[in-house]
Length: 252
Ligand code: ATP
View 1 (cartoon, rainbow, N blue to C red):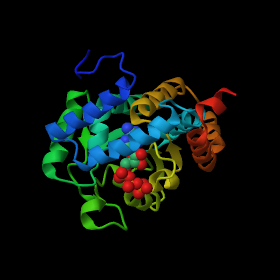
View 2 (cartoon, rainbow, N blue to C red; view 1 turned 60 degrees about the vertical axis):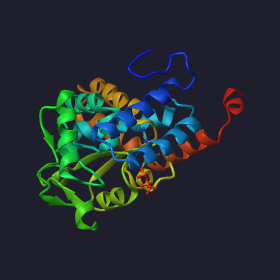
View 3 (tube, rainbow, N blue to C red; view 1 turned 45 degrees about the horizontal axis):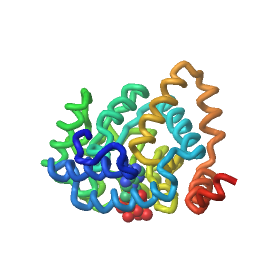
């Protein structure tokens, strides 16, 4: 047993552990109640994907690492679910790629912004952006558009995990390279991303970090080749195929 009252031998242990983290996030005031619904939706897709990193998601994670490493200014966006599920993993990815971390909420309240920033600092973040809120993503109403001008506002590469479809579309329309982590290959967020990583955030972030560490010494040409070789449409189709494939078919 760990912090959650479920034996590790339980067949749904991992999934129950993540549910518990989201519940704890709501109790601490860092995750919104809508976050519980988003988690449920993600869980269903993870179940269908076999709760594993499929090969196309691994290729996407590598392309994401290459984008982050060659960026002029990269920002990792953190919402209430990401803060509850993978705060340490976010901080590690930022360190491995030189990216900044910015709190970016769909339902923005100063209190929740502060709590998430404090939670990230407890997990090792030195600087957390988002509280200034002095920038705007064009095409969204005031509340939903708020970002930091020297964070997401001026970034050329942005990683937005578990993002709302409208905001993902508006961000992509600004011409930034958008990396999305989303378990649903049919979601608008995944479909508008330059790099959709169809994987659970708790597996995807450490995987991008591993690729970034491995590519740390790579030259520009190698990073460019990885970025060029990645095809988002193909990655989404591969994820859909994985969802539609039964275990028996997989073993054939
Ligand atoms: P759309 O992008 O189609 O408009 P939406 O904005 O309604 O969808 P939300 O419910 O706001 O989607 O966002 C939650 C998304 O995050 C869902 O697509 C869900 O599959 C995904 N998701 C939830 N939990 C996780 C997780 N742990 N890891 C990765 N993705 C997740």
